[in-house]
Length: 353
Image 1 (cartoon, rainbow, N blue to C red):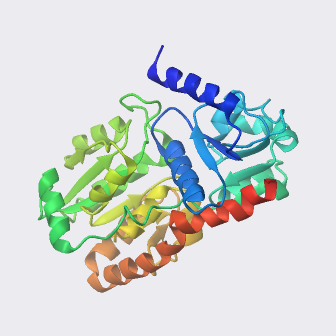
Image 2 (tube, helix red, strand yellow):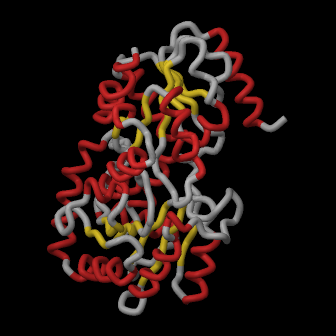
Image 3 (cartoon, rainbow, N blue to C red):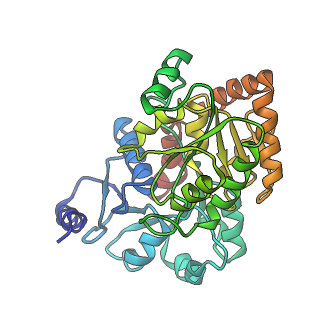
């Protein structure tokens, strides 16, 4: 039996005997965004005394709880029947993909789910267009732990670059995501994440600037192969814990988001908190929070030339870059998990208590 299965079994046993927790956030076995969000939300709710909560890898055996499935996929696999036993059901659905098979379940979700959480207005509109009842949707952004993610002084940033082996005479562009299909090498691109657009924009920038790319996250094979073929140097490291990413952000000159579809990404708030300017396509949370030229730069989805030009403008204009960084450091405060936990409680959990 795998370790994940053993943990799921342990959590299922705990579920049978739990009489104190009001909220159980059901995470996925992979140590990635869904689990991280749950840990932050539950941690803040408990710390602030708003609601006794915990993270679980199983919903089996729960009664008279608020069950929050951290992804629509885990709900469809395991949760369609768990609105029985007096449970209230919350489901996170962060983005709608092209030809999304999950939309076939909208009618059942309307009947069996109490609230659907998403992180941006774009996804809310897509879900409503596909039949989800508007009064079932709550929008709360993906946040950042402002205790872990901070902008470090220039000397400390230089030390971190040296430790990673990043040159001090190159512009370091970051991409910290999972953008390959599956959990293996990731040679087949997950196109909604825009790895092809990202590579094309970086290759264009490398014609003018000395670029090196810093990658984290699993399944980055497509990006690595494409950058290598174009002669653009890169470094790929896997962070053991989410908070370890803060050091990687502090090595960057620019974070580039090239996605076609996103619910977040968390990299927006993490970049802002660490003093890294962001250039992004206009979708997901960037469309909701970036004011072009004020706290970031925007280009249209799939606009490689627009992304490259926005990044060029930011890199070549020190005054603009510093203005954007400083404004983002102000704006990110509303995206701290301590603040967002109140939104989770007010917009979701308190309504179902």
